[in-house]
Length: 172
Image (cartoon, rainbow, N blue to C red; front, top):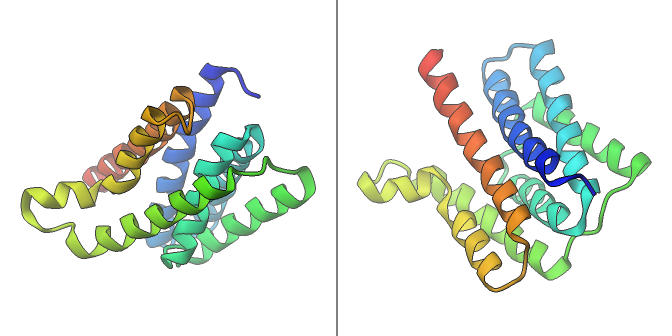
């Protein structure tokens, strides 16, 4: 297992790199979008390998996004392939199955409502920032399903993803 500081840092950079891969893929930047997708896949793999709790969160993000049809650009498919190769050849921690199912379905719900309701006034903020999974993360800590450290890590992942989106869309 990674030490706590490193774990939080990897969560944070995984969020940044995922948003950058998505952003660069949208702009068809070629090699750079594929490189960033590979870096993102590596960071995801570090989290998938670390322990069952981090694997539960990150597998849910991957599977939920695939099911919601959000892996829709070639560089993202490439990143998914890199992640699969890393998992096959270097292993991963098995997620907590029932929690993985619950989290994955919540990711799908967040992705679908994000697309449909993001522009609905103040209520749209909940959907813009994919609030269902954040609420479930907090509830999961409260119920003792996941550790506070991993939940904070995931929330940092999510925050860094959203902050990167804000910074990239304001700059470009």
